[in-house]
Length: 199
Length: 190
Image 1 (cartoon, chains in turn green, brown):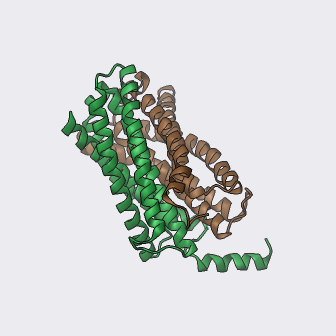
Image 2 (cartoon, one colour):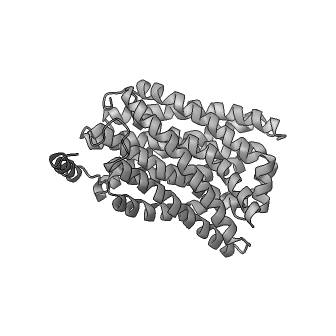
Image 3 (tube, chains in turn brown, yellow):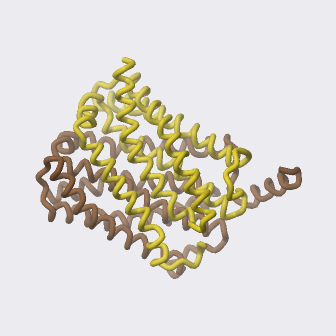
């Protein structure tokens, strides 16, 4: 890279809210991830509390990673799209913003698709692993918790990108860890709240 | 690429990866429900407690790396060909350090929370399990994420729509599996 290019790169770095030094990335992310790990102990404690039920009921253990993973997926699609639009200068925080509406529509559609399939799949796998939970209660559990989660993901993602932008942090560094963690924790809480109502 | 996609466009582009991630999540769940893992959960106190934090750290570290690289590509700060220098190298080294530091922190934190809950836990055991799992995860995550982002971008795929699912997919399946490897290593060492 020539000196001119390097200078141009530095100016670009100042123009955009991102910074690409190792120290900057580590000192931004490590404290954040450490705090979020402390918060994750909440859902960890829920899992520890339900340890006996989880170990005797394989279908519920099967649900846990998918529930957490899908929450993170939907949240990061939402956040990555919003923050790239922010970087490109095409984003507007308004309910009439067509990009925002399209993203929300896609998130709800994806959640609906995934959680219906999840209900059927966890029932089948649970049976193979020797579980006795029926298809109907599992579908009620996955669809109810999935739809609650989709709405929650939209609210949390939009708030996180907006807050990160207002506080002057690059949303790429901050929103995905925040949103995936918040959605993981609430995903587990929503799941086990629905489980204890249905079962 | 972004900015004018309809809901159906985004749905169509994200659905295959989300479905692959569903299958992978089910695979991770089946691993989690397996006899070996259930034995591990019973034998290593604190394993269920650290599970969400450990899996989420993978998402946080590598999801943020992916989003950073994606915005860098969109902004033209990164060349769309992989090159071990400059911004890209910094971002990769930083993500590796983040993953290791936070995983060791989780080991200590789990030990503290277990003691606070009035249950016993072995600090050294937790540290070794998480060190092994974090190291193997870094290799797997970088090995999958970087080709997907750079090859995908060159072929016109918006990395924003695929990073999250790829990260959680690889993170969950390998995360649970590498925890099992970590447990096996502690058994060999301790």
